[in-house]
Image (tube, rainbow, N blue to C red):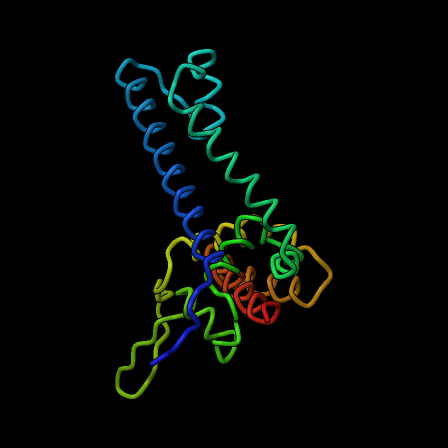
Length: 208
C-alpha cells in the first residue's frame, strides 16, 4: 500500500477552487456548444474557437451568461496567480516551461511533499502518464498511457506540454535535442505526452 500525507487546510481550499474553476469552464463550453448549435439550425456556420464565436455574437454577448462565466473564471485565475507568487514552492515550479500559475498551484495542492514518491517516475505514474504494459509469452509490450489518477492534473500537464513544445523543441539544450529526436520518429501527440511525463519528473525534483 502507498501511504501519503494528509492534506493541509490550505491544500484542500486550493483544490476546491480548482474544482470550481473546472466546473465553470465546463459550463462555458456547454453554453458555447448550445449557442453554436442554435446558430447552425438557422444556417449560420461559425468556425471553431471561443474568440470567433464571441466575435460573431458581438453585442449580444454582454447579455449572455457567458460573460458572467468569463468574469468568474478570470477572478479565479487572478487568485491563482497571486497565490503562486506568494509561495516558494509554486515559484520554483513557475520556472519550468509549460507550468503557469494554474498548474503550479494545483500541483502543490495535490502533491504536497513529493518525497512521498520514491522517484520521479512514480509521480508520473500517479498522474497516469506512463505506459501500460501487457505481457504475452513472457514478452512485455508497451501500450498507451494508463490514464490513472486525477484527470484534471493530467489534462493540465498535457496542455502545458502542448503549449511549450514548439519553443522547447527548438532550444539548444539536452531537453530540446531529446524532443527533436522524438519528433523525428514519433507522432506529435506522443511527444506531448512524453514531455508531460518529463515535466512530472521535474516537478518531483523541485518540490521538497
